[in-house]
Amino acid sequence: MSTALRLEKITPDNVDAALALRVHPHQERNVSSVAISLAEAYAFGEPAWPRLIFDGDRLVGFLMAFLDIQWVPEKDPDDRRSGLWRLNIAAAHQGKGYGRFAVEAVREEIRRRGDTLMYVSWEPEEDGPGDFYLKLGFRTTGETTGGQTVGVLDV
Image (cartoon, rainbow, N blue to C red; front, side, top):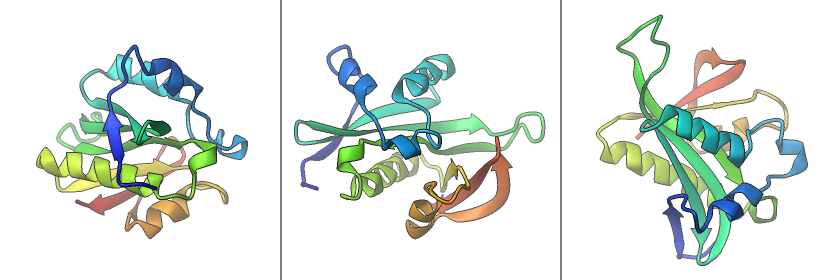
């Protein structure tokens, strides 16, 4: 991992590269594709924050945050949350610190916007990303969403 890490918006110039990004095949059941994520970003509008992760000129990953959304409006319309919605690190670039960089970048954006908590959810399967998030300091909330474990981190 170099010091040239940065996030970029998805543009007409980089969308094809974004759509070609692939995680390890055994991880595909744990995270939606970039194509699905971009469709959801389009549908959700402003609360979705999709970004590409570059190391120099090399695309290494994709993330999408959710910023200030109503969590479960029918339960508590005042419960608004921000967090990491998707994280896809290209198979060839995993284990190099890019995931940690992505989490910290979202954490900084949430802090910049004045929120104090960052949420994430993950598939609770043995080879899912739960250990990764717990090592970064997320703690489980006891909640689930769509069968996924919900974690929270102080920003």
